[in-house]
Structures are given as structure tokens and as C-alpha cells.
Length: 40
Image 1 (cartoon, rainbow, N blue to C red):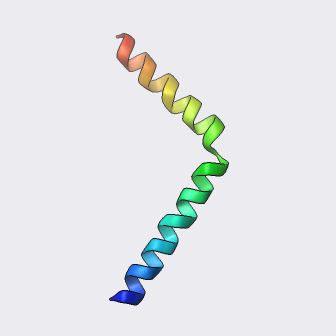
Image 2 (cartoon, rainbow, N blue to C red):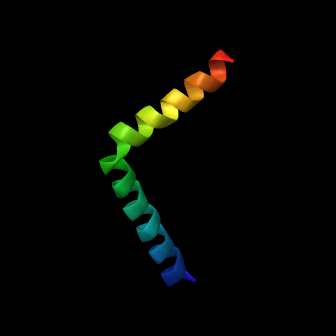
């Protein structure tokens, strides 16, 4: 159980690191989508 939870945390941390690296473009794309949705 503890080992599984630890590996899950590590996986989430890796995903977070990957997201930080790709934030500039992915965040801008997400923001554009949200803004487009809000202006409707």
C-alpha cells in the first residue's frame, strides 16, 4: 500500500514537472479556450 502510494506520488510529481516545462504553450492554449467559452 505505502509503496503504491509513494509511486503514485512520484508519478504525479513527474507529471507536474512535465506540465511546468510545457506550461507556456499549454496554458496559453487552455486560456484561449476558456476565454472563448466565457465570451459566448
